[in-house]
Image 1 (spheres, protein in one colour):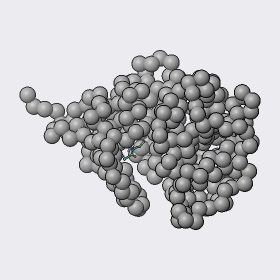
Image 2 (cartoon, rainbow, N blue to C red):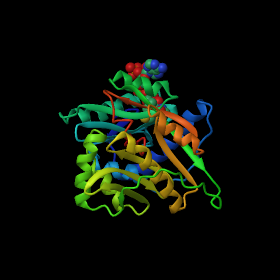
Image 3 (tube, rainbow, N blue to C red):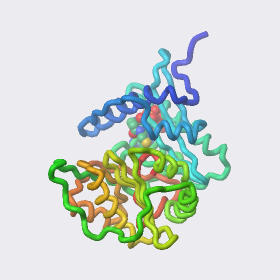
Image 4 (cartoon, rainbow, N blue to C red):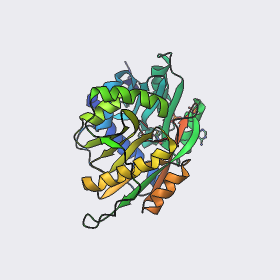
Length: 309
Ligand SMILES: CC(C)(COP(=O)(O)OP(=O)(O)OC[C@H]1O[C@@H](n2cnc3c(N)ncnc32)[C@H](O)[C@@H]1OP(=O)(O)O)[C@@H](O)C(=O)NCCC(=O)NCCS
């Protein structure tokens, strides 16, 4: 029997490395077409985030293969409470605009539709790819707000000075199951959903440092700082606490020995974007949050990663 040109199936953990290689090619092709420099990175094993999502949402991961069984497309959707979020959707350049992305997206959306509770559909994508913006808009997720990737770098021997105005609340870095239970209720208010899966990952990973800010027993906010220099997510109970918690996170990165820091600032939060620019952060690129309804609270929340917000 003649084999169909493209086949689709649920993705498995063993697909992750080929998927990452395909994503790198697709991402750099898009950057090149948009007049941007390629980003080189070594793939030495499964990406920790992709490995996490395929564990938490195994029925939300899909892969497409050509006749030679080469992985040419990949999608991963996540469900957290009543929110569906698209972590990844990429197609190899020579297979783009032929319906592969649409078919992968349909499977990912069906994963959400099977879960009748879904109220919010969301993702973040590159502001410079009109095709991506179009495909999601067609499915009822339209651009809601810009996400600005901001970076500062320095010579390890000459780190910047700590920024004044950090949060003076009590900080807890040893985050146990009980505290994660309380963070779950906190996230519902600030982020719109609970996401204990990610809190467990952050607290169990050696290279990730979560901090919770407390007044008595009350949670004022939290932030996540990675060894590699990613800052976020950052969540605050009140808008005026977001800035001091962000400053504490940036200063903590200096203690950890960062020589580069990356943050995804939400464009609607003027004060935060200005604080970062005033402290030597430079804008690298802009992404768009696309959603079926207003998404998280930009005055109280800064996302950590485009793939899970
Ligand atoms: C975005 C991407 C996943 C889409 O996959 P694809 O296989 O190329 O897309 P498809 O061929 O299935 O569908 C694209 C749709 O967008 C439509 N489209 C393309 N450009 C458009 C535009 N400027 N305005 C409106 N619609 C447009 C097409 O007509 C098509 O719709 P149709 O299926 O109703 O005909 C793929 O192009 C890709 O990997 N791009 C680079 C990486 C990227 O941006 N990924 C998204 C990260 S979240």
